[in-house]
Length: 85
Image 1 (spheres, rainbow, N blue to C red):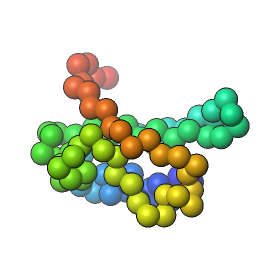
Image 2 (image 1 turned 120 degrees about the vertical axis):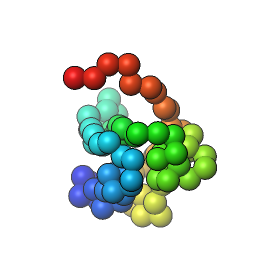
Image 3 (image 1 turned 30 degrees about the vertical axis):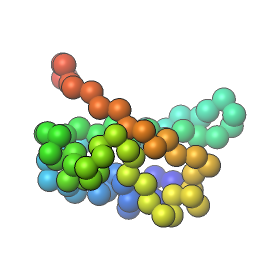
Image 4 (image 1 turned 60 degrees about the vertical axis):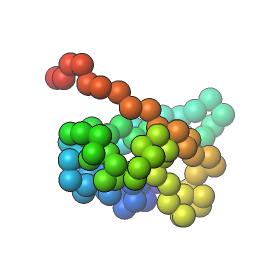
């Protein structure tokens, strides 16, 4: 799964100007599936728009995702970093 994600959203996010990093995380879910979370860091909202388009509240999904995921959250949440390190 990780190679697919690296080829699509994770790799594209990391390659977008203004991206300050990306963390791909996974954990087993209670129902026996595996959850993946992508946490990205950006210099500005403008940089996020360069990756995600004008509606930065909607997840960037790819046509092949259906072959890998049983569901995909389509809502994105944005936070300001308060502390680092």
